[in-house]
Image 1 (cartoon, rainbow, N blue to C red):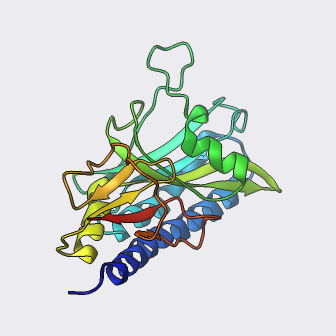
Image 2: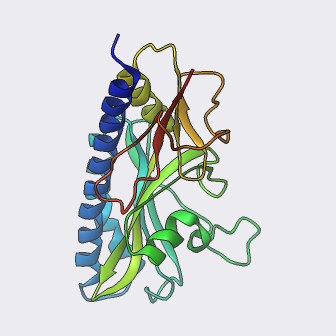
Length: 234
């Protein structure tokens, strides 16, 4: 059996590569969005042209990406103060997911206050957020990869993709294999994304420091600092 350190490194590498491919596609989505926003007209309907790009992104990641789209800054369009152009794969078909963007409604979905939207605006860099419960959208635990969209040197939107927890767990377990050690994939805030043990339930908080000799960082080149670690214990 391989040493636990070696397995942690290979597992971290596999997870990092999967995430890097997602962020590379978000770059492509951001570029397509910038091109659309540079065309004449300020209607939200222009973003429908992103559908082929989003469909390709959702389909090519083998179940890792559940949904994707762009969320625009307030005041960008003449026919909507805010707009959330988001698609999800439903029954093998890409479907536009409507959100209630009326501030007067009890079911108002204010994406501008969501961490996955706020952090890229603040940092100016790609971000990996979650797991969290998306009550305003899918009502399920998800992880969101997001990055700012720039037009004429100002941030006008955020491009994002919701990632499947099940798919992340499959990659984690497939590369980890059967181990006697208890291993958890832990976020920067101490949330557990996946594990091979009932001791570490996904979505709960990891009790202990994510760093240390039994800890390996998941490398993601697009991020300033990787927010995920693999942590092993006896």
